[in-house]
Image (tube, rainbow, N blue to C red; front, side, top):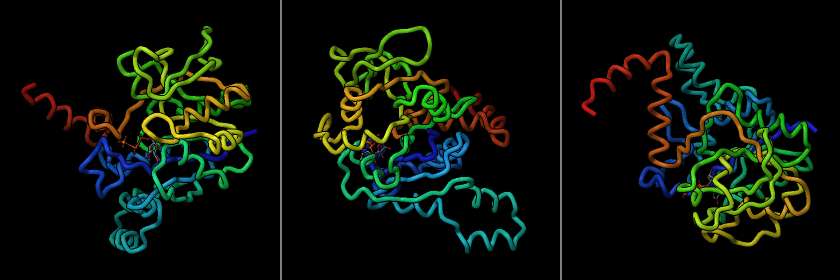
Length: 287
Ligand code: UTP
């Protein structure tokens, strides 16, 4: 079955980015001039996703407004002949049917994904975290969707992160082989270095079968007192095959201050309109 639907959980508090995230959703913080979540929606559209559900929460209405049309603004831009600006405002949700659900309490990523149950129905679906941007030639989620079409099983997007960073991620234990696709034997959310089965981390992209919802309904609070998606995936892996795919591309955690700065600098350098000027400015700094 083709993957047509995607879910972006974007309801979290974003405590790592306080004080900015007190009133501004972290997914709306701009990387140069574009909110992080728009890059993710664009990745979904480029991979052929048709229906997108964004999970929001109280105080995150800026996300809903961003993907809505802005009649007054767009009328003024149109009258003024500002076509490029008009395009920038209008193109944010191009090619996607976008809808929203509120997670009424931030009980964790697993709970946020469970809020998508009615939207997903009985189909495989993509999950893309609202603050993880991945760049590369092929859309990251498209790479996982391709693998899903071959194995008809849940596929987790993974990369190695180095032992010192394992406590920040869901870490997978997989069967070794030569390719990029590995069968998952086990998973653990945010392990201590000493308990980590590997340094292969799940990095914000998943294609999951709908059987996960039954697992999520049975999942108890785990790491950090939250209902963890990784714990539900462990249960799922006991019932059906789950694979990890080492995707190609560079991933930025924009919900982390250093990750946000890296993305900002690299995206600005890559921009045709800003890259040269910004490069000259960086060279002039006494580093
Ligand atoms: P994070 O742990 O990165 O997000 O969750 P957070 O909790 O917002 O951030 P910090 O750690 O406090 O800074 C990963 C993803 O899951 C979503 C977040 O919005 C983020 O995209 N999430 C997390 C929810 O949607 N609901 C939750 O209850 C928790």
